[in-house]
Image 1 (cartoon, rainbow, N blue to C red):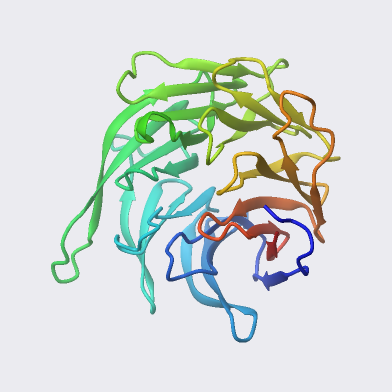
Image 2: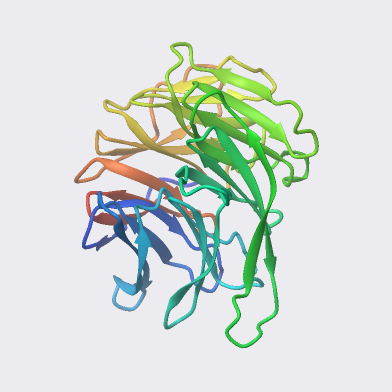
Length: 342
């Protein structure tokens, strides 16, 4: 990964509100397209789809649609070949699947697992399975994770194309679950991990849901907010604690003992993104305005310093490394999205 000698390239987009959730499209024909979710502390929130006009080098908003409550996460369907419908998923009060066209974005289905109550337990996060895009997993403050199956039907007039059903729901933690992520291990379809307010990282196998494996527990039992699997080596994952200034790298073969701690940030870490194309590079982003790229190949020797640092003009809420364009990382802070060439 040649990180030096390239001219600095940054493209910036300013949204009309604070940006929280954000993600790159995966489709090869929509290269510089991202979805952004607003963070407004009221019911009415927005999602914008923005794209880079490569001629003018400016981001333009292609579409804005309403979303109840802020989106806790946004993901495009992990469709690297462009064979599925152009779908986008958001989590908040429920999991919603949206269909994107050139002129509009419309709701395909709302996936609600609380059929028999008026109360809904908000979703903290979700993940979309890369090997089988008909599988999604959600995490909730009600201590559960739910695995959803999608059916993509044929177009019949204006009938919605996509519907979903609960494949399984399980109590994953003793307290709120804050994140869920599928692992690429064992075929990439059945293994997933979750983190939560009880301070543990737990691993599950859809084929054997009667038990789970605790991979790590925070020594102070601080809540763990995020987890992120290495994209090239399924033995490694990264996690971080609430208000924590370090990112912990774990090896599932050595449970409960971190193989590395990345602790150069001077304020709490908000985001983690592994490189899509390299097993030893990871980007972390924090309230200290910094996005740091680390080379971890000398693990288990201590990793002292990042190899690249970028300072933004505000506290960075989110970082995403483009899976189909590994030269580009997106960050958001305040009302801004920036994409950075690495």
